Length: 208
Ligand SMILES: C[S@@+](CC[C@H](N)C(=O)[O-])C[C@H]1O[C@@H](n2cnc3c(N)ncnc32)[C@H](O)[C@@H]1O
Image (cartoon, rainbow, N blue to C red; front, side, top):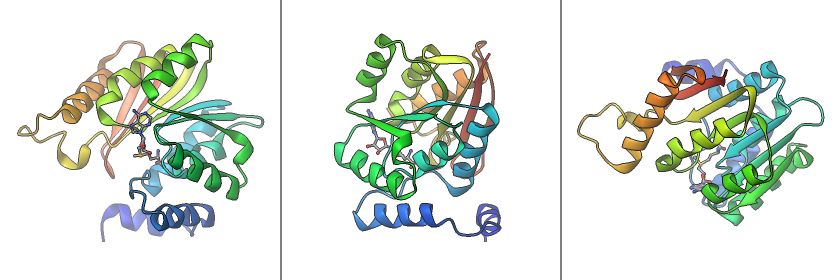
């Protein structure tokens, strides 16, 4: 048993999240939702921050969306960016089944374009979850900072890329982008941050 499996075993089953994972599997979608322990952390960080507005980049089937929306303050809204319309539809079904359908809006298409549009609209957010194509991470981080309210939380998932990030033989575009993202998370003077190495790695930053 891994340490992560031990820790996950401490928690009782969460029917909304189990149903969501089943729905993702039944539709043949990839099994790449956030790890259970980090899902719980998303809820806690959103709550601790008193977040009312959240932006998620990469919806898949709504697992992380449920976790984030659960932590938002009363009347809060999660804006979720997703490349594939069919994935956003599935995510919406799962959010609705979890009683959170009214808490989320989806923007379909490449996040690069959706993020520019959100900036043009003057939108600001208290909480960000970056979990889409890894090559986009450095750009998504810049957009998140530009769209942030003071004190906003920015989280990036899979920053270890299952060992590829730390493997010097790996030099592909996703690996390079994630290394650059991690460097910026650690050294950008606009941020206060930490990086958790459990599961597949999670970067957590606060905009000063
Ligand atoms: C790792 S999955 C997201 C998992 C989800 N956050 C969760 O934990 O439940 C990545 C998602 O990002 C989406 N995606 C990939 N490239 C994208 C892009 N350029 N713009 C928006 N979404 C993108 C994929 O379609 C996929 O649904």
